[in-house]
Structures are given as C-alpha cells and as structure tokens.
Length: 103
Image (cartoon, rainbow, N blue to C red; front, side, top):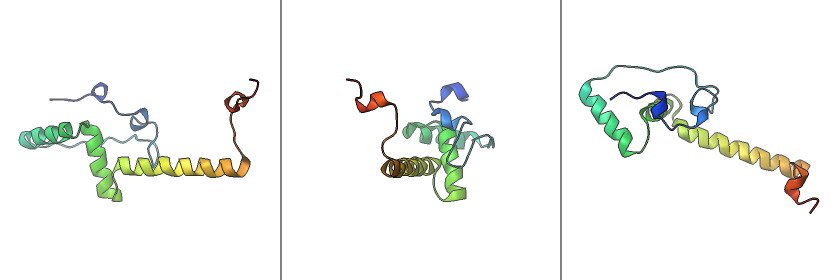
C-alpha cells in the first residue's frame, strides 16, 4: 500500500509552508520490511493519522523530545498569548466594522 501527498489530510502548514521551527522542506525516507510496514500502517490507521504525520512526530520526538504536533500546539499557544498581550498594551485592533461601528 503506497501513499501519496493527495492521500493525506495534513493542514497546509505541514506541506512545506511553515512548522514550529520553520519550513518543512526536507524528506525523511527509509526502507523497512513488509511485516513492519503492515504493522506501521495498522498503527497509523488505529490512531486516525497518516503515515507522514506519524513519522514526522516520531522524528521530532526523537530529536527534540516533543512530537511535531506538541511543538505546533505550543507555538500556536505562544502566538495567541503574544497577540493577547499586544491587544492589552495597544487596545483592540482590526477593522472598525468588527467593533460594531456604523450600526
């Protein structure tokens, strides 16, 4: 069973746009035996994840001590807190229509 990029439901940031440490541009490939491959596919399917996402999580966990998805959630949380802090310092920002003006 082979997977192609079209088979995956990864968010766009996982397709070389931006990850928690920058663009995802490097391929990580290897060969494994058929029995392990079938178990790998079962493992991924049981978690409702595609093989690329699980492999990415494994690599990030090995190298950084956190899965890719954990690092991404931390980055989103950090960005959200930063935006909230800026809003407190400079007040709300956005289009005037979002504040109910002109009604």
